[in-house]
Amino acid sequence: MSEVELPNPEELEEAAGKRFSKRVALTTAIYAVLLAITSLGGNNATKEMMLSQQMSNNQWSYYQAKSIKESFALERRASVEAILAERGAAMTPAARMVFERRRDAAASDEARYAKEKGQILAEAKTLEKDRDIGRAKDPYFDFGEVLLQLAIVTASTAILSGSSPVYLFSIVMAAFGAVLSLNGFLQLFTLPFLGP
Image (cartoon, rainbow, N blue to C red; front, top):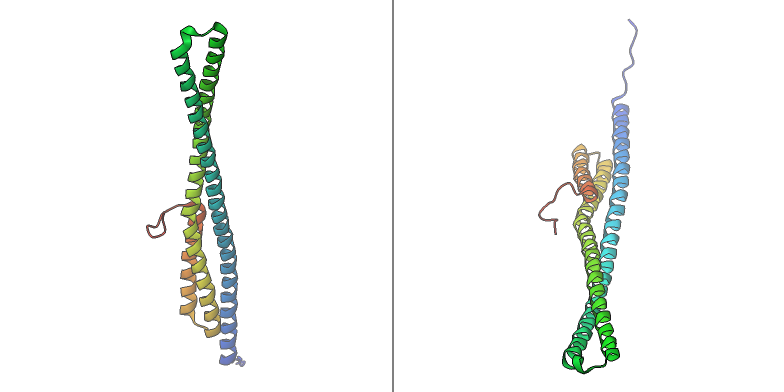
């Protein structure tokens, strides 16, 4: 019978260690990609939230300005109506026509400002909703980033120590991080301790 050469156990152990290290290193690279995507989503959510807040503030400033103008137009119309009521019969037809035109112009301005306020109000509310969506997304990205960073650290520790349990722990951390990140993008569920 021919002799079969058995592999050296030390060589087998070294090869298995290299396979484990390569697997963990590849997994760590995947964690890093997930972390980059999560970070991008978090940064975008924050930017959108801040931009929507600024734009909403601008709309509320416009709304306030239109309210003041509407109030002035109302006061002008009321003043002209009071003059017409007090002196209307004694006025010349030309003077009465001037006051009636001023009254009508003030009423027209008042109606226009009220309509513009309605449009501004709708835009401000829409921007506030966009802000609130960004605010709701942001914590999921934040916690997703933290968990993915912890997964990278524990996976690196697993490579150095050759520990499978530490590697499995990194997989669990990365899975939770990826789920939170995905929820930041899609808003599939709400966690009470992360919600607004």
